[in-house]
Length: 58
Image (cartoon, rainbow, N blue to C red; front, side):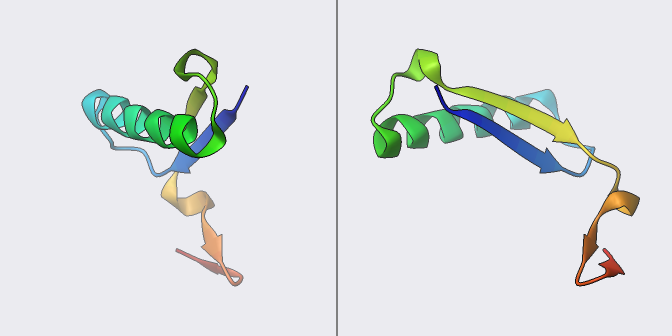
């Protein structure tokens, strides 16, 4: 049962998240050879000030 966590900045609409979750699910089914009903996608909206790359804030 794939559990896929997506971390991103806040601000995406529910429609965008739904469409993205559907695309991720379709890819998981195709690549991982699993059932659609077994794929879980969780969105974690993380504030931009909590993101760093190479020690520098994004």
